[in-house]
Length: 228
Image (cartoon, rainbow, N blue to C red; front, side, top):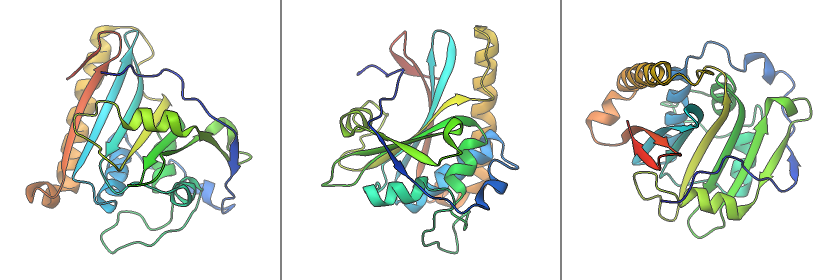
């Protein structure tokens, strides 16, 4: 199993001009479970058969959270649009959001840094990174294709193959900050329970029809173990 990387490298940045009114709705009315439901909804739209929600532990703390899917992936143009505040795309009647805010609203309700890594079949992997500290200039940092490809090729419990997407949250606001194993375990247990319950309600028809499978696990980087 390849080693989880503490630092996401970047190589320059690209300007992503937002709708000035868009910030008004960022992060409102989201819990961890509802934020993750928005990301899973994006995976459904991408035609994913599998979605993995993974908590990353290192040095006894929860350091990151990743939502991984084996959907169609995003091109450079698509990932730039997805990371643009207020960016527009086509929606179906079954989509949870219709304002281009789902990814940013869900992510920044929980984390200060958002990284998206994706690969479309037959194309180079791409990556973008947004941080609340850069929200004033709306530039997304460019993640090198080599790092994006490395992360997409890691052990995610199912094979991403030639296409897929990783949503990574760093500096998550609600994660326990103390190195108290009992508290961390209790937090993970409750987060998994509440998230599983909420996703079961929102996506029960898709889950019952085996249209999509949602997995939750924990990766302990120090122990090089994946489990619950």
